[in-house]
Amino acid sequence: MKKVALTGDRPTGNLHLGHLVGSLKSRVEMQNSFDQYIMLADVQALTDYFEKPQKIVDNVLEVIADYLAVGIDPKLSTIFIQSQIPELSELTMYYMNLVSLGRLERNPTVKAEIALRKFGESVPTGFLCYPISQASDITAFKAEVVPVGEDQLPMIELSNEIVRKFNRIYHTDCLKESAAHLSKTTRLVGIDGKAKASKSLNNAIFLSDSPDIIKQKVQAMYTDPGHVKISDPGTVKGNVVFAYLDAFYDEEEEISLLKKKYAQGGLGDTTLKSLLNDTLQKLLQPIREKRESLNKKDLLQICFCGTQKAKSVAKKTLFEVKSAIGINFFDKNLSDSN
Image 1: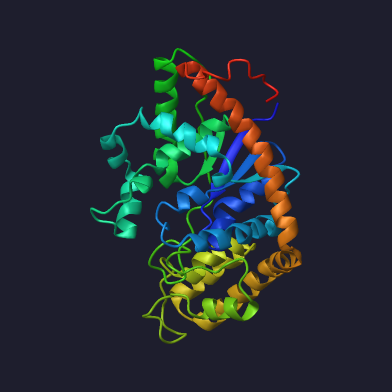
Image 2 (image 1 turned 45 degrees about the vertical axis):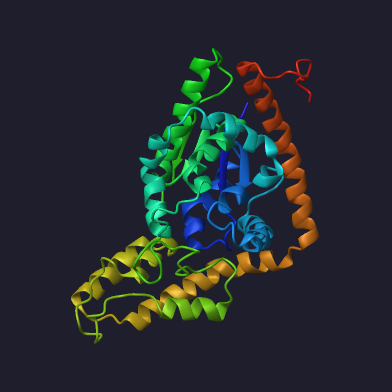
């Protein structure tokens, strides 16, 4: 039996190079050795985009197109939409009884996201509680492995706390703890050099960007403002062009030599950006072409089939949870096949 892995994205916009190095590549690799579920977390996206629901709706198929374009195979990975599986919301309700308000407020990931979105004292309750929703997603599929970045480790910790508390209180072992699978790649910096590459900050190169847009974004990348002349010594640390070359250019030794030459003086930003542009154009062209070959009808069918499969799994877990609590009043004879 393959181990179960669960991962996903909030469909708030097209995916970008940060997603490619941070999660998409590993998902393509993992689908051959794991029973992998990939979730379009539209319910969680609505916790801070509740006033712009069409943005979420429009981006669901865009994200699925990105998945398929980079090599995620719907025959190997189950792609599903969170909002179409009400069992996940019901599980969230039961788990909310097991987590205190203070525990949610202390969650460092939630605190950082609240600060980023500048909610202040007006934090939507749904947003504050989304770690509980994530626990529902993880446990519904009994995921043993959850690929995340380091900033998401508190989410896995809270999910496992819920599992242990639920199993202890209701004298069961129906819920399973999960382990984080950390990305091998560090977070990709935004092209402005100020933060991580992000959809919301609009400082990323998207998988669907045209050649001209890619070139424009590379030209706009932050380098070293003190590196005015080619002969001037340049700073490598914090230089976005080098960060992207480290992530996407295959020849490590060549990059090392370029860094040394740049630091000593004698290498211009234009030369570096030209190399990076060529590298990214070569990387993204087949992804873009695959993406453009997809049609809405096929994407919807893939998502429908995946969601039906995921729903059947979540339904079984919900039955076990309600049975453990003792509230399966009308479903006591529900068979495993249902």
